[in-house]
Image (spheres, rainbow, N blue to C red):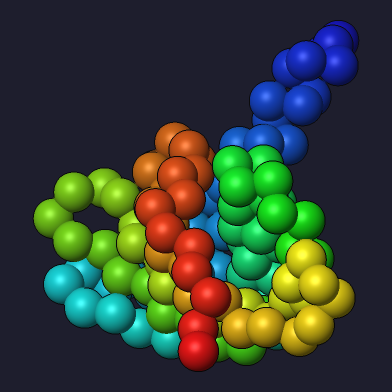
Length: 118
């Protein structure tokens, strides 16, 4: 019988696979391609980017919606994802942010940049 940690690991693996299936077309090698912003995995990735930024910067912005995004894969097994996100800034005003992150085939996410657009 599978224990809670084994089930959690299995769910994480399934989630990582689902993200790759959702945002990584097989033809993505060497270029950037749009992602489906209505896809729940893309939405979750945008929410994660905001939460990770808040964890690093402690500025209290809040996710509003994913506006657009694209992704691509170079020669290494790392997916580069660019997202445009609407969020409320720490003053409660609507602001738009541009993010870039990497996702490894093992599912490790790294937030590379998160900046407010003018």
